[in-house]
Image (cartoon, rainbow, N blue to C red; front, top):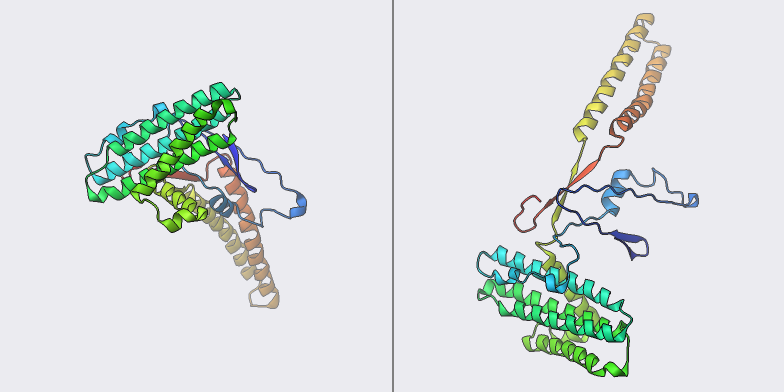
Length: 316
């Protein structure tokens, strides 16, 4: 899936199966007037600074009925197990609600639209009840539960407000719209009763949005995998560079010894010849190394990403 992120950036979302291998070729067309070339930014710097990749646990075509409530039911066990299960549950709910809202907005028939919206409302209420049913007793886990409940309630409310705003409007479906509005109001009142957010935060739209984005990042901990970059062929590159240097130095020493045999005394001509030899060595050493290295690494990967579970640190 390819979608625009910002004005000068885009997002590619592939789904990897078990032991699957994917190849992605990107071609950029840049006007010559911009003066962008290989000297503007090195290949390694461009790759590490401009390409951001994330890997997360996911399920194909996940929808609200497919969200596994067994994650939040596992409140017995170690603290990290509960947190990871809770985060994974909230992460799946967010993906599912986004996917279902997007599909519902494509429905043009009002009757079918509001029928589907009512089903989503019932499913969302059921998922929220399951989350709140398994409130942890351990005080150390309460903060994780509070963040998840606060974020999920707000996220679902915003999703249904978007559904009401962009969906078809008709006076014939006033009852259905009122039911959805009442559901959003009930979630808003629930967060106020639980005192999840301060009054100053609620009064400022930017502050509440930033807080929810922060909670989203905290929830993604344990779901979004940690990435480590490994540089491939680093030892091979050193070997090539060392071999080329050794060969060139051997040739240079042969030329120097022949020059010393010709000129028995140190003269200006000998110094000029030696300077010319060393200058040619520096010029051709880089060019020869670059040519040989390009021929070796052509078609081979240069970097490898190693993903680890952010909680258990296990290699995925």
